[in-house]
Length: 140
Length: 114
Image (cartoon, rainbow over all chains, first blue to last red; front, side, top):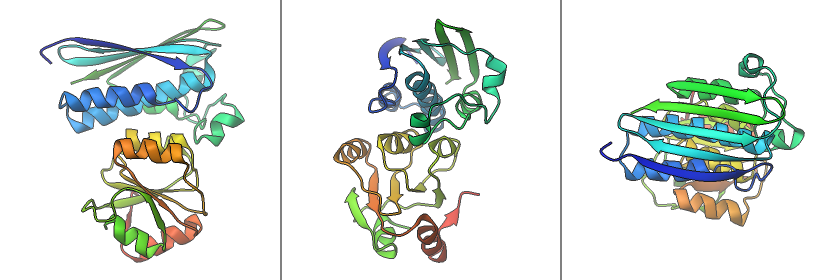
């Protein structure tokens, strides 16, 4: 990319009607920039999983999207209960999601492992009782 | 297979999207669990589901899925239509069960994802 761009979006905890809005905006931006379709798909699938996690588990959060010279950096920061055991949370099938989340078609304990699969780098930091920061790096 | 063929085979109702579109699906995947849909890497996937909510449409948008069949007589809301139109996704309502829907499409030559 010739130019470096920065975007921010708010994500409300519990608001499933808007879950995916930020990821959708990111997809539109990447399409306008003519990024490779496979890269776009990996990016937005990872973003959508992260965004749904904020809606499903946190009280509020924000998405910081940076387009850098040879990579995309998307940071999801939330205020919420945090993750007690990140290694356990990464295990496919492990989930603490509510019934409401499951009714939406999520909460099967696949989100974090799918993010890892799609991202070139996935960094998760969490403090119980405070919140979580998820960083997704995609090389372009 | 074209969208118009899917509508005909399933005796379905095209709620949004273009019936004359040349867009063709290569494979189909049936799931009510959107997390499973989000793991697919194929292109031109038809999604068959009984889960009718906004996240079904969002999942399709992120996964580059351009056509969804809502089986078990599930109804598509106006909000879902608006979101689908934004991304050019065709929505088909169908009164058959997921099993029957899959059976008819499989018989007509639609291949599974795996």
